[in-house]
Image 1 (tube, helix red, strand yellow):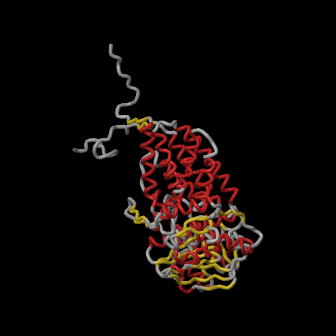
Image 2 (cartoon, one colour; image 1 turned 90 degrees about the vertical axis):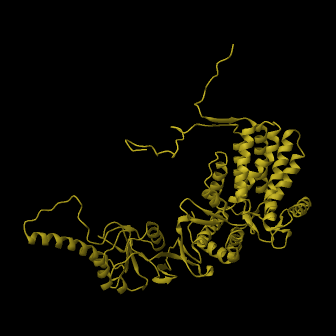
Image 3 (tube, one colour; image 1 turned 90 degrees about the horizontal axis):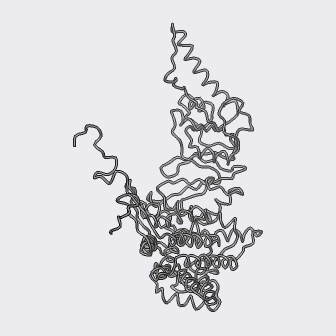
Length: 543
């Protein structure tokens, strides 16, 4: 007698399971890794991505590329997530983390195909990761924080290493100094949003500058603005969240008047309120008035007559940064503007940068903020510069907090690879194979650096293996001379935390993907009708 077929899932549900499923997930992740593979290192290529709005983005930052690729494969999305987390946590090494995860999966694929249980592979990978992280901590070099000059040099080296693989590599020394100066301005917590970045198209990259204080674009202004002075020495600054113009009545308000005098008295009252506010501001002694809300034409003219400068509709973050730089506090009323709520700075000026006018506050007493003004030709280029500097700033922040550094350029990966390979020979069982597979996978970084620069990767890797076997801890790829060299002496330095984070994240993603052996995809409700969702006929609409 035939058994009736059991229908468990809704019709149209797509489910696949077992070894083929894991292998197909691994293949999907490999194609993600291939997308960013060529962007690694100083000789990496850039990608041009055109998003759904038709905006073009040129970048070689792994996280930016993966964010803008609309990846739909559920397993491959894990790699996008680890790139994002690496970007948020340490800022740099986003390409490396995706490459490592892709390579770990590639090395584990033959074991999965030969029906080794995924959990055995996962266990070995976890063990190898712990060993690798321990090893990084052992061999990383601590830099003395007491010596200011040496500490600063370390930070500049780390920033230059990060920038050497970006579009701005030719100006890396210029920007490394700028980034370190910027981060040095911040307080202990090193808040990122206190470094403002303003982009002005035109000019050369070297025209970029760092303002030790606040700079923001001149806001929308009314008549009377040109009569205001554009430079003040030691002004007092009032920061307001008040509208200094005649307010329109509320839409639903209704005032009934019998005669012209009553109407006139209402108008007069409005003007009186406005002038009272303005008088309060003037009497407070402030010379520069900034407000988040609009400052109208009457107010602008009033301030101009009294030799004061005003700017309305200042963006929120700029106002907050001015507050941090110049002191004082943001007021929501014009009453009691005492001297303790006003900010001050050495010099306020308005200058022309490119085609824009900028307001600059410099020489701030307790400045814990700064602004970078970036110049450059094309808009995409400036945006990529900003992303590169963001990576460098993150790295410098990390290096300031964690003073351990390792050598980049494939040196640390080769050392870990040798260490894991030696360890795997000292144990028995299946783990030995898995750990040596992970050791092999770590070589992807130096190999890819060579491939991207057009070198003979096999030749250079053989030299690297030999020199590490002889105990040269820090030998890595020398991109300039197509050879190997001591990268620690060559000042290719990276904070150890970058590598630790990259290896742990890549290993976690690998374990996650290997532990998924079934995907069940529910059909979209209502079926995939032609015309896509939301294209129904509606009521009575003709076909």
